Length: 330
Image (cartoon, rainbow, N blue to C red; front, top):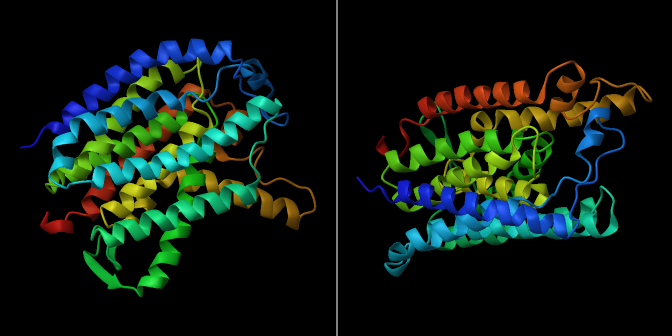
């Protein structure tokens, strides 16, 4: 069995861990501190000034691992792992610009919603067209648990896929609201994609999620409660791009529903809160949205939230694995 994915995981873990300490020190020198929402939980005020943009460390660790470990594959014309990384990096760059503007302007708002949407949609369309051109993406929509496919018109599929990607990216971004949450949940999701790719002999695609899993494990060392650094939009948008890209690169985007159940719950809580607020002229359905803040205000500790949300993700990933057993003849 090809075990290069394991090497990618180890390389990324070590590099991210090594880069982390120096990066945090540099971010402190640059005064790249996080601005805290004024309407957030009061105890979050103590987090103000904690360095942000820490996602750079696992982006670098993952990137080096993907290039170095995957070099021989690229020499033979296998670029799937590189495409997925570069696509995720494009979203990370959008997040970096957003973070930089927040830090420079010392407020909790960076790029406008419209600017983010246009940039994200453009990145999604380019990625999908590239994957289609390379023969790595079909318009046969795989239905998990039923082991069947539904042929969709390519233009319709492109529109569907682009909006799924943008939605997924922003859902992951919403999940990044407390210490260690987005990192731990996404680590479990990356483990799922690694196991799936290895099990089906898609070792090229296994390199990226394995490397990112290693990077996130190392990042968690610095990001667990109480966090020494936050990933910022730089990291969370990169993670969102990674989750979405892998769903489509493995040609089973609907699997994002069970494996991303926490991302979906966070997003739906935000949507429900806004809709209820408008419909009732100022009343709130949740104490605060997204969901993790509601649970915080209900007495849950950050550690408990991370543990429970990660466990739920693990269970859903196990169910998802059952649902895709027929994929690629598995």
